[in-house]
Length: 313
Picture (cartoon, rainbow, N blue to C red):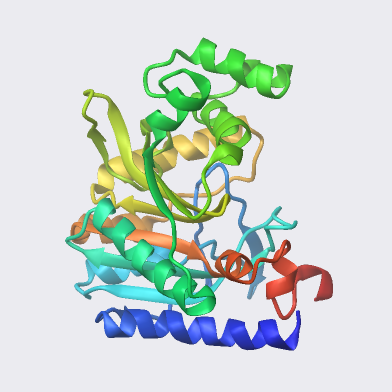
């Protein structure tokens, strides 16, 4: 990492904090080491030993931030480190910097607007140019590029398409995984430049998002992902507040992890208890700061924007 990039990284962190301080969001400092972790089948946590007990480096500050929201705090943001195993490469490092924030009483579209304002300010400051912004539904992307509606297409059809796109191993894959593969291989490379929002994801990929009916009466998750010049940058939700529904989703994740021979994890009961006490209606988004810096500096590797990437530790 050059001295110039290091200086710009410092300025970016200051700019991010300033953006939210001016908008009356409070910065919170939450643990990066805890006894529980996420059940998400697509995320692997880093396990550690603490006084002989098992713990995890946190994959995001989400659960702790929602526990604070359930205690009655207002709008909050967290800027700090997150950790994920099995992720090393041009766009991945096991330790990375994440910006996550929550707005009480907002929906996902209001939050998309704020993401646009944040990134737009940074682009304008660094390049003095305007930011191109596109907003597309997940279904529109599939219909345009693959000719199928992802919400109504039958699983055998999606499996056949996944096999054609990759290999015969996809013939028994889940609906969520097939859709994920088709999006990453056939749609993501064709996204326009600038900032692109994809919203109304399939219900099977709802994670911690609410589910509602779209204009066609189909159940979709109130989730969005953000791409910046073709690179995945952020992931946001209209947050699920139903504790029973969230626990059920966690248990389904755990069952799928066992079927996939992945490491076993348990439900974070403290998080479920926080939802039971009452998480207020809110929307939240997590943004990869290192990836944002990669795009602002127009570099190819995450190692170029980190003082010490994994290969230098």
